[in-house]
Image 1 (spheres, rainbow, N blue to C red):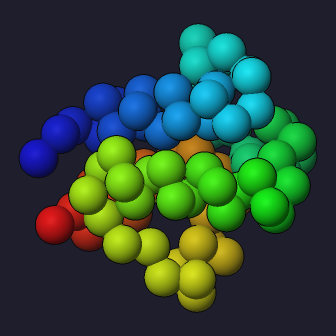
Image 2 (cartoon, rainbow, N blue to C red):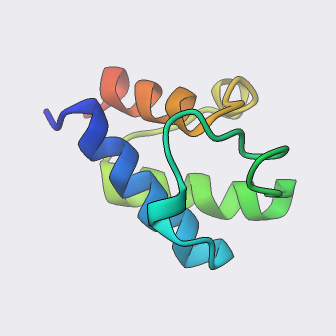
Image 3 (cartoon, one colour):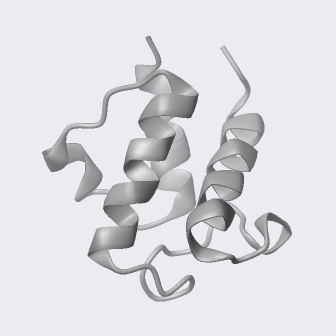
Length: 81
């Protein structure tokens, strides 16, 4: 299983793909909405990307708990297939 930092880097790359925000500007403490300005439709695309690239399923109820990049990375880390 990949280390948490590696997962955070993959998520940052996915965010960059969908938003144009440089992955180097994204870390585990960044909030999706307030820091990165990610709206709900874009967040859904990002979550789909995370599922595909990280081999994990993210239930809708779980995704609502993701305030930060670190929240998403921790979920991937603990729920990978």
